[in-house]
Amino acid sequence: MKTIKDVFNDYKQALNVIYDANEIEALTLLVINEICNLSKAKIKAFPETEIPARQNDKLNNILDELKTGKPVQYILGKTEFYGLPFNVNPSVLIPRPETEELVEWALESVGSPDSYRDKLVVGSILDIGTGSGCIAISLKKNLPGFKVSAIDISAEALETAASNAKLNDVDIEFINADILNPKSDPHSYRDEIHKFEIIISNPPYVTLYDKTQMHTNVTDFEPHAALFVPENDPLLFYKAIADFAVTNLIEKGILFFEINESYGDETVELLAAKGFKNIELKI
Image (tube, rainbow, N blue to C red; front, side):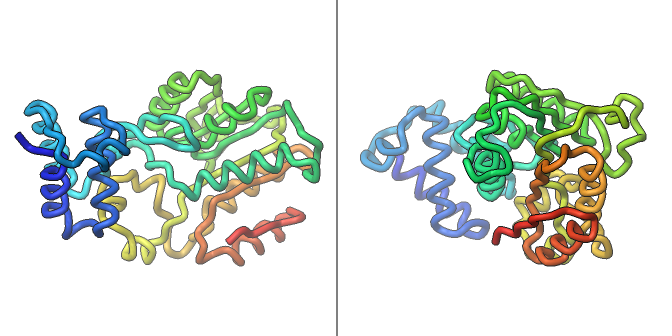
């Protein structure tokens, strides 16, 4: 019967051409924790613990998938974001830590005394390109008094987002719409729609050049429509969302973006040209 130590050795040997040593250790720890229902502290403290055959078979099957480069989050079908559980699959991007920073920034803007309004507890938020729903759901969970809406062009992504809203016991309005052509859907946003205190988005921003620098477990498995933009128009989505925000934010409303760090100055210039004030670029 194999031990925890044996599993770590097997994963290290099989995955060392794909991941570095720290990544392999973190992956192995995560998988054993999930499959064997052992705490990470116990896994580390008792490496000679034997693993039952059925669980070992599952660990081997997961290792076979990991060797293809498939992200462990897709294999397990779930991940964590901002302290909350989320279902994930290849129809949605895997939530990233930098997006947690975007959520934190938005929450700070609402709750801090020096924000444009003092501890706002009600209002409306729109998340554009919601994917798994991680941004919208995390904001709703922490701002229960707000009405939160979220749009995405992918019906499959919206199904996943809806399952995550149910999982986290929050009420989100999900709408299938294309921000590049917001008037194309008669049930999408119209001129008479209420305006928002906050519009937030982590839109596609990866260029073809960026793609060459990325790990294949992203480029081969995560949804390209949620990642990539044309090389000759890297700010395509920022232009469209900014135009939408000009007419759909309340006075003194706030627009939040996650951006391509290579285009920070260009994004600031774009927003300034469209009339946005007090623009802050966080590096």
